[in-house]
Length: 175
Length: 370
Image 1 (tube, helix red, strand yellow):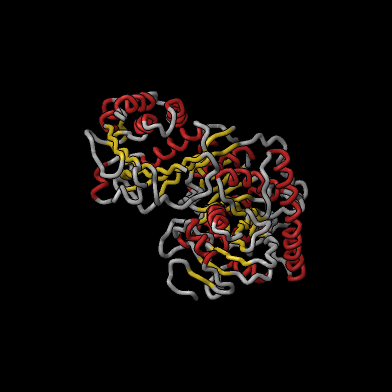
Image 2: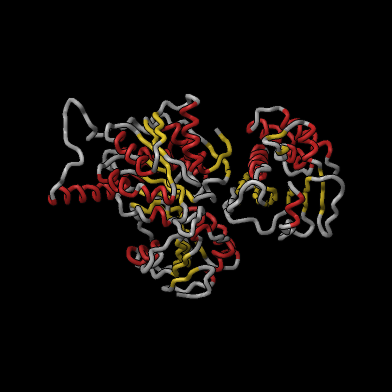
């Protein structure tokens, strides 16, 4: 089972990112569940969502303790949350940001999701949309296929700029 | 069609296909997504139902009762305080023998104010004459909602059915969902005591002890008969759609020395615990109770039993553990866990089994054996 934990702030689309990733994995022919953890959050508060991907039906509902991959949509949560907590040794960290972010014992990747969203004018209520471009980055990391990412985004969003933003992130992420 | 959906959306998808004439509902977390989705189906013209946005849950159930007594198929959804607010009408729906289907997204009852999963909300309605079923996956939520209408509307039953799903854990989790073409799986509703202007009759008038007593026995007789209808419906569902359900979902129980009994998502998570224990040489199995009313017969003879209650009856105990002690002559290790959405993992469940002490009650996370 491949387990993913997504850190973001309320309103940034972390929950939708989890659902998109689950849908893309499902379109790849895998079993997938997306379980957002709902606390007493509101807009701007740090939030966490979980995605599990497996070749077999998934029977686990409890929170992910030892993720294989951590996604950080907003680096400012790292001031208040230990995003590496429980991450498996050699695990992968995908950060929204500019420039390398080396993390001892883990493979880290950065991609400027905010910049991609702003350049594509993907903004809702003043916030750049991060959940569709991040899917492109996940395809580049080989978590899900590019085809399934495009399908998943198209199923949930009619605006074609969402798929384009994912393609941009796929191109821009250096692995 | 194969897709991916939350538990809430799966319930809504099933209800849309069953096409109730009247939906009356009031939003409450974590159920709101169901009524929002139903309202959207109606607004988009995908569902030809009367959607009544009432001012409270008491009114939601009252509106369903009023519609149902005309012979109309009705649906509502609620959760926790919403369910308790409609308590009077919940009793009325069953006593009036109305086959209303309600989704209840299980949530703790305040105070302290808490929106997370617990079964105590529905357990407070367990003696009202409603059938109650608890589901553990998105697919099961969809399948069971379909079956609920057929069971409730069967002439031998004519009692309302409550479909329960764990708040957030299932209501907001996304999993795969295969929808089906229901065709004639759910026949048109024919309510024998529907209001008929051509034949005026009195409803809900003062009822003397003799007639009242007979009505109560008639409810119980139908509740007993519902067991056969449930079995027949689940068999027919399996025949048509190739997914098999029962009163109790058993996992690796054939040769089990110790059985974990639980409901909802904890019953599914317990399967992983059973696998872990089997790898250690412990012959563990899981019985996940689906139907709480009518209460199932469990074959627990000669086995250790660990019951996880995500509920509590103060001054009495875990309701499932006590019920099994009474009906299955079990002496369970009674674990109280998951109240108010308390995190319970498969590792925790495996540890309950390893450290079991038959006949005692254990509050998980409280460092006391009671």
